[in-house]
Length: 200
Ligand code: ADP
Image (cartoon, rainbow, N blue to C red; front, side, top):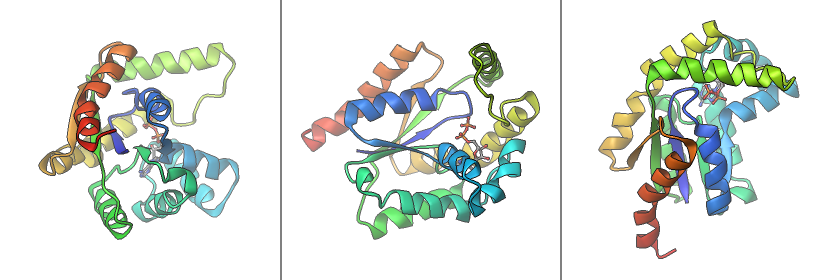
């Protein structure tokens, strides 16, 4: 199973990705997590990404495309993967298509978590407060200013992927405003026809 999770910051991509990982025994490939790991390890990519990410802007396409290309070649991705946070631009989606074609792999679907933009700010604000209450370190881009940039970037650069994958017949949209379990059930429902066809 090879999936893409699409949705704005705070849509619940990470939560749903974890559930899909357990259910389908696939790996979650989060470009945000990979970039944060690179920053922590102070690699050249990390150094390049640090300030860009803190502002809420996008890291250059060629950087993330390179990271993903290497990552999907790892043995643990053989059984399938769920891309969380990638692609985020049309050029990234084009690059992914070329990458998968070269490896003779195909995508099973693109899950879009549809959320009301007004609710996102509240969700992220709540997440920040909860993390602070638990004494956890808050992400440098989880602040109102960077969040606004992240939402703007989503609207202008990432949302066009909805039509992009819609035209290819791969898009499966789910209401991301419902409670977590309901969203999970809706995802299972949109994915199950694929599984029936593939006999697994
Ligand atoms: P969220 O979905 O909450 O915005 P992520 O962890 O997916 O958070 O991403 C955090 C940041 O990492 C993004 O704002 C961006 O700077 C960088 N990033 C992650 N994935 C990509 C990508 N595919 N292309 C460019 N930048 C990315």
